[in-house]
Image (cartoon, rainbow, N blue to C red; front, side, top):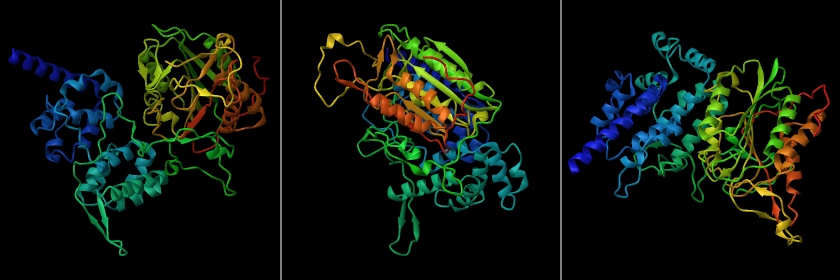
Length: 525
């Protein structure tokens, strides 16, 4: 019986590996090859053309097995294949003796991969030009990828985890904001014991990398969040409009941090922040995902009012509006993939509005499965959609981020049975974009509910539409408008005077978003 069970598990394991193999693109396979270049010999890796070949090498080295598939989990997490991870049965192939999952891909290797994901085609051409006197022309051919260049630099002893100066100089000339990421890596490595700096002299003595790094794979369902006091995901967004617009914005989440090194604000000679260009042939696409009818959750009465308001305002602003109703989790992600597949070359920006129930993990589809905020936005990164490179990607999210109510500062006056305000509770710890030029305008701060009036729509969306119509003609930038939305919504309450709501914009914008004032009057309410 035991033998049959073992054979069944072995067959299931091989089926899982086959599913991963069939799901990965050729480029993703080469990404995995690069990430494994510290674990396997370059000679063996040079012949790998499929994920199956790579898995065989890892199995032969006892790095991947039916007893421990944590390396596969780590690799898929690094290349951001979250939906694939969720579709697998990886938990069946993890150690059951209480062993923690140690980080096997070094932070150095992950840094290089992260840099490659942030470099556009033109930047790669510039890097190759700067390496003309260092590497042979054959190694700088047109189809050579940045990861292949890194490997060539390592072969020439121009690059390793203790020798980043050459790469840092090149990146500094190409993309200063990415150069700061290398500096950040050096700092983190020093602080974690990776470098010993001699007192006063400044000599740097390398310490070998060990596999005792902090745990990075804490669960199969939350691979990108850190929920430990004192630790915050380094990809956190700047929170609150005050960071750019100069206006005041309530800052509530005590676990959030401002990472200025991730923002490369373009300024003019007199110190003013520049604006994104809004001179394209068209403003862009606006996708509205409106979920009303759920399998067992309460129907979102009044959401059609929000959809109508958003349609009217964004058409008035010059957007081509696309709408999707009652989407499952899969359909939400497919709608984003379809949006990314469109040509945005002549567009100024892109907008996505999501109206749905929300839970701690993210947005809820009508099938009541979760779509995390990271999944929501990752399809529109510049790597996934080149025509959106350096263009603002604007998300407006109407959903709860928890079930707590924000109480007012005075006692209730009316009885609860007179209250017709409904909560959308059903916060995203991982609602963290990894690229520049993003805005996520959230209807509420983490852990709290947001409110919807069946006859009037939601407080947040209605305030957003009203203030866009009021302030765009005055030339106000989007963050200033969202600050006004914050102010308006913060003053609202239910009839009992108990429930309160505080919206929260999060962004990695590098310029001001200013919509050109339309020549026509704003749409009627």
